[in-house]
Image (cartoon, rainbow, N blue to C red; front, top):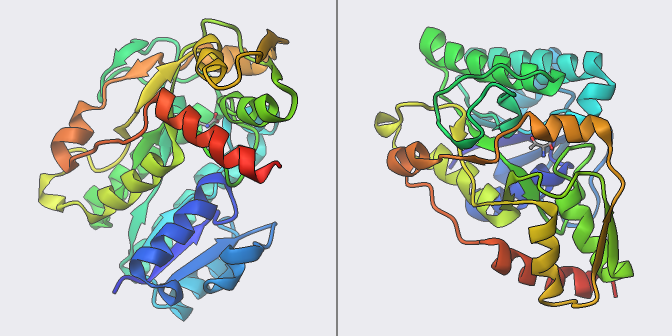
Length: 316
Ligand code: AKB
């Protein structure tokens, strides 16, 4: 049985991925690693938790040795909006943290899953049907760290044989833990506000198309890629994956099918608008489908129905 460490386990993806991994591989075999915020509820009660700051290599190595970890899902990261406000922090966590994880993985023979992002692309990238292998000249600190991270993971595989794998996540929509400081966060907030106030003020402009994905598909992608036959992987790291592309108006329309009186207006955040405009409208994810069978379950209509049902109960 695998012995897994999840860094960033209290974050938006980490909190749900840790629970799925515990279901699949056994509660005691999945260590939730968190830095600042201690988990609560089922995440804390269902299995081991360790304070793991990825910028502290000794702490990381100690945890990996203590639990005989053989697989690290490295989810600790600073998202795009915060990275523009705190570039120094973003570099430290996203680059030095990843470097520490890869070094500890090399020394302890661990496989590593690291998410990249649509943020690894930039304004000179073809925005439609963005190919797997194309121009990557991002103009944000987040993007710089994501491109460098993709290259670092490739390097550790080629140079040291570390089994690194990863995907380029689009905006992830979920109903469990809120994302923190991303450009795509509007697509989560809008559901909460639709239920609470039947209205939402969006910080991105109408017509801003971005790739998005519902959490269950994002989790399946991570697990399926780590379970994939390595001999079939041509790319290994940074696979484009997406399940839908929409702008705020399309999202609002899908909500109106359930809440007809829902109102959308705009108060644009120039920083996040500029970031969003530098990212693709929609990516080509056919290499992921060909190399490891990437597929998905949720389109916009199905996601909206589920989000409103789950949040409707939760926010009662
Ligand atoms: C962000 O908006 O920063 C993230 C991402 C797309 O990587 N959700």
